[in-house]
Image (cartoon, rainbow, N blue to C red; front, side, top):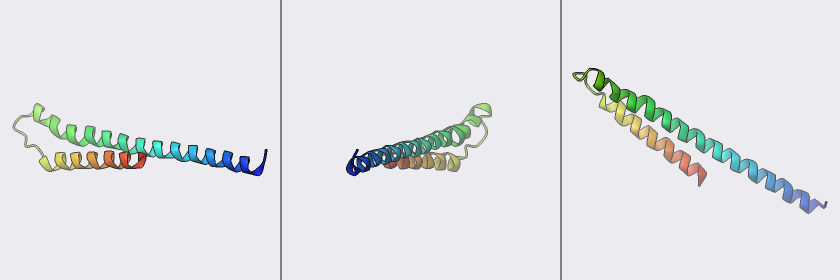
Length: 80
């Protein structure tokens, strides 16, 4: 096996590791996006059904939606 073949094999291995790293990092951001959506947005809306007279904390819900979209966008950007 020549030096050129070893370099090609090393480059191929590095490319595969880089691709896996990007996929896992993007998955992390997507998962964080889902957690924010579930915890903040849905958690902010559920009390309305328990006590209808309770005020909806609109700022928390809007901030949760914005952070969710932002994290999903970052995850998508990493994959591209």
